[in-house]
Image (tube, rainbow over all chains, first blue to last red; front, side):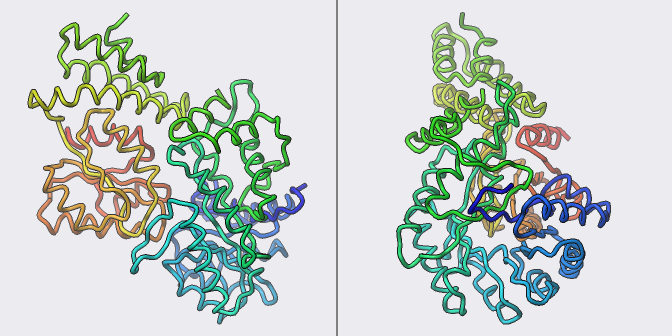
Length: 283
Length: 210
């Protein structure tokens, strides 16, 4: 049962997931369709489709395969406009898919709205400085980019509620540069600004705990509780989507849960102390 | 007890206070800085790499160990420079043009430093010509290219072409990043592929020895 108020974009059909990569390489379409079905059954609202570096026609084919086993809308996951077009065109009529994603460096992808309506994930982790991408290191920069991307989306006829902002989540186990604090502050700035009322926010949640051991010293899981702790902190601030796994039991945690204590501390710590606090949580 | 073995273990455990203290004690006792690096710090980081490959430790432990090594190195580096001792070889590293991801690249740079390579880190979004210029400037033997996006993978090929065009035909190119495979490395003419930061040390050593 998914967490109330949380829309899950099922992440599994992705070429960078090792087990899925094998399915692609083996041409195991039945296996890939099964993966789509299991995410549908598991409570995903959207099924993400990422075929990695393959031909646009292959993405279109995968879209049709996935649609043959699920009525759920899809999330077309590619930064390449040509591939995105092929994927969007293959989506069945009447569906409003997600396009994952448009960044300030590929604003041309808004033109794909001429083909069909979609909800874009707007990546606001980088900004365009005279055609060159620069990472947003502060919450203020992230927030500025969010405002610019929202303005672009509106110019292309989208409503605020059609937009899904992705403020970027980084691995907490390698966070010596305050990325988690930047993220939480960005979410809060967006949430507190009335011009963003009704906007959606999403992160690629599994990225938060990548690089961490699967189990804590006592044998209990590491990743699920940390991801749930993040959701517990971010959902009241308007985060309502994740690209994530239906196998995880995302839940709301109480403030005294060890994972909540860990992330609460991480918001106050700096530099390597964040990494060491995360290590303390699992070691 | 202050000996090279305890220094290695301080690095493995990421205990930077011990790493610094033992280094100071060893220097005071007259040990040569290069001995401390090669027989204390480098074996420590090598053990870290092994444990990482075997899933006995994870990225946080690796980062904490690398910091302990770095702080001990900060004491030794001026002495090495003074004695005119340079790392045996130099590696240039960066994330390719169009790509702003740096975690993987930073981990490799750290592990290379841990193996006592000279490391020139060019950062992210590095144009092909900049790689070529840095290799020439620093007389590097190895260059590491990182990419996290499928859309920036072609920039690896462009970079390899730029290196060749600049006459850098003997430079060994190692590539890595989430979407990268051994096949892709072969396809674009890279000399090596490293699936993780610990392997990047082995791959670089093999290529330079070859």
